Amino acid sequence: MKKYLITLAIILATLWFSLTSFMNSVMANEYNKAVVANVIQNKVNGTNVDVSSLMEQELEKLAHQFALESITILQAYLPAILEGVAADMRLKADKEYKCALLEGSNIEDDCKD
Image (cartoon, rainbow, N blue to C red; front, side, top):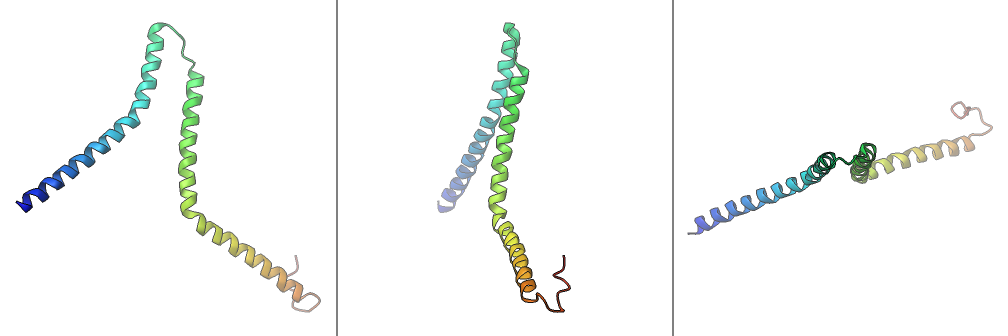
């Protein structure tokens, strides 16, 4: 009886997960279907579709999605980027301090620009 309940729970969980995933994929395609249906309906009714405005809106939508993905990537790699910038700033500050200390001596060879 226990084994039957565990099997049933696994099957129901798998079914729920697959239906939820399917529902999300359907929602993602609904926008495209609605846009195409609207364009077709306007053509059938004889009204003109402003294709340039439609293309501009689609490009803005894609740019927004790209910006969101870029922010996510930057958020993931920001600590490494900041460490690299901080390391470069430390190297520059160390070189300037070293040159200031060695000013007027014979060891200024890497401080000359």
